[in-house]
Image (cartoon, rainbow, N blue to C red; front, top):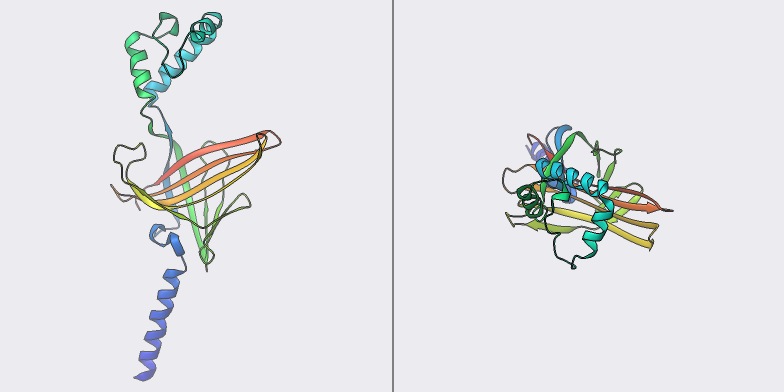
Length: 227
């Protein structure tokens, strides 16, 4: 009987240690290894984006007028409507109002793969329109590694403003910022958490790096489906 109790105790201790191995990520690891996700980005709605493209095209076609028109604008004051903008007055009013209230817009789909080995958790498939980025989390040292850079220690996210573009969500964030000059800098943010409304796991990856003037930029939210 004593041996049975000892085995049960060891199993319980082992399970407890295994759960803690996942560190700050523990509440946000999906039960399945491969998960479909919506790739989201902060931006205007598709309708407003179409209006913006038309305005941009018209400004390019009327470049001399646009330069003179904009030179008369006061700082911080939106450009008044003009027929040369290539859209109707009501469309322009909607555009000006809309760009002040950005929202999460779906820009693609992704298949995220989670692998766990001891204290190490890896997430691949964080693609979006640009190349993949592998995320490696060392739960023991609480370090997230992306592109060979180590993001040490985390801060808590408690976004409870329901009017925010991202909606309400809670989680953990890691970041690194190194600046040499305008041609050489590194700024990477990674966050993982859960939506308060709906309970979806969400991952945020923001990469803004430059090396010898060559810049790589991407900023996406990945909303995991069905987990």
